[in-house]
Image 1 (cartoon, rainbow, N blue to C red):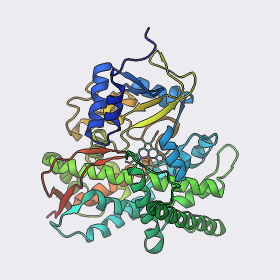
Image 2: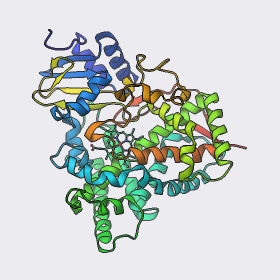
Image 3: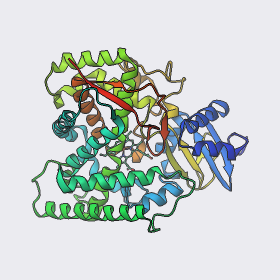
Image 4: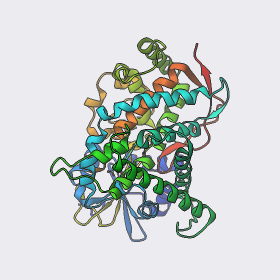
Length: 445
Ligand code: HEM
């Protein structure tokens, strides 16, 4: 048996391609799995890289043999650590304990209280649109989802607190989006941008700390995630999170919780604009079920086409398009011993366009989800929210937000592309359109 899985002979060229934050990266990965199979490997400068593309292998890494894989690889870990963001997302001995405590605060039932504020904020947001006025839809929706995150996580609606959130999230996003630049300075180098980020970050953490202190002094006054996380207790011994753990958790939720949903909705509106039949079916469902009134939590299960559109959009353009792990000693995968320290990549983008599991895999067809497809395919043929112990903490929040916003937006408006420029994905940490996607909101009769 060969010691290592096969892979492209020119590792420089291959890894060069997959470092490109463009369609080239996605094409190179796709062509590698088509040529070499479910598990591909290359070695460069003493380090081995594996790309896997089969639900059984993904399950092995994320679930069955997860103890042999570390969540955050090299450079990304350094950057995330520097920004002190997403601490709950990293391997720590207390990661499981923290997840166990916060998970009951993040169930679909607990999330449904957010439908009304989400709908209200969407409505206020739409009131500012002028019919036919061109908007950069990704940027526009990201302002809405930041505002929703501030409101649902911290009951912070407007004014200073919201501006603080918006400013720091934008700076952090810009910083992380530049991760792939050839020349990048460490975050501790006092450039003007770094200093702005640090200063905004300081203001944000200070304001989160003071909110935590105020809530501890007078609990039960708010209906937001901070209140739920502060009240959450370990079922086994009743222990609660410390103030520092609450702070880290809330920052992790804030950072992870707005861009992804804005990206999902951006791709969804784009796909609907390109597929008039699907758009018409969506409008029919919204008109039948809502009949012009505002969407409520009880409506969401009665909107199967909305659900299918979101599912299908996330299949073709999963915002978290790649997951990475670092192998620890003793990892085995697909009959191969995996090198210690090797990087292992799994991609929902590849898996969810795999012809072994999806007919006509590159075509947007929401109907495919309406007859129980999800139950017929293997669990890890569709994993936009990941899996195992790091599965997305906010998946039910994200789902409810996507349903509510799509229903609220499309009940009143349709979205027409302002030009016919090609739309290509830019696969960075999240996968969003490479160029501004200009759309014209048109009021529906
Ligand atoms: C469409 C929207 C979203 C998508 C596609 C998405 C996707 C993901 C994925 C794939 C992971 C796992 C990454 C890995 O295993 O390496 C993840 C983790 C995470 N997500 Fe999401 N996410 C979304 C929205 C949200 C929202 C709204 C929140 C918070 C309110 C959130 C909070 C988190 C957190 C805290 C983690 C880290 C979990 C851990 O490591 O234990 N996400 N997300």
